[in-house]
Length: 383
Image 1 (cartoon, rainbow, N blue to C red):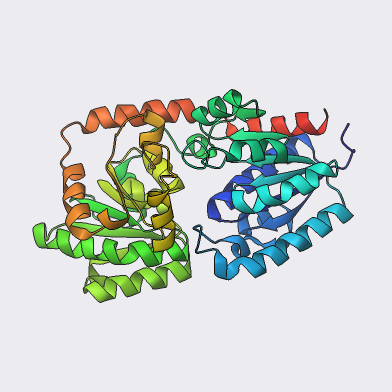
Image 2: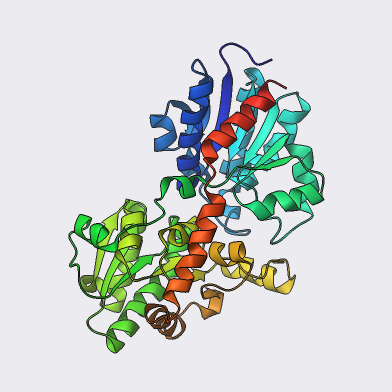
């Protein structure tokens, strides 16, 4: 049985994990009012009451080879975290996303009798499927946001629970475009394209230039188009502004800080980086074009060794099991590909059918995820 004043360590490494962690803390506090929360946290987790031993930004690195320059610093953070957790063992350690970091230290904690939970599964169903054995040794429970993930773990005898996705709970089933445009002080009439080049510096540095070039390409075809973009941070905003300046279209794109959902809802179609944002766009129910670019070494390894096993990489296509929206990888991410694809999304004749498919996905994922996750963690603590 867990202590009367439970101690829970949570470790997140990026904005989406910070959001998940904050909602999880709030749900756990409803069940464990006296609980103490600490770990590696972002601003929302800190606001929810998590003591920050380290800021989550220190873990925000993407790619197989891109991580190498940061490796000494990350290893030091991991070593210090293990020492601190073992010195003051929590009732449970919860890795909130940040899979590569969390799953490498969890075996040490589990061997010392500390319960371990991974909230958000790695994409082992897509590539490096052999990691499922490592995950099984590292964690007591995987909390899955997507239904097919639990099916994969069940097939490999790893304890997992499908809890749904918090985004599906928080986003209304219908979002009115006119309302979103009014909130952003945009004209109600006219076609509007949204740009979301990513939340990490690496993503924006790779996707910003082709996205900016796509704006220039589209304006040459349809000068009346309006462009709006959602920026995740001051740093990514600066990177994207530089890319827009380089293409001479800075004055054609209106930037908004931290208002991704409203930007999506105000749009007629979206060009965005692969990742959680594609699920958000699905739930907002707007046509989209998805782009994915990694560093050259990572891309070479994925293609050469054929490590990627899934038929798609964007969330709507994975969840539907078919190509609902176009997705482009690496060398395909350029203006003469993205531009025509976006025009096709703007002019989709089957838009109503697409919205129906997105609505079905939304219904499947809407399960009060933070509550389900909190209940699963409390059950594990009391087991």
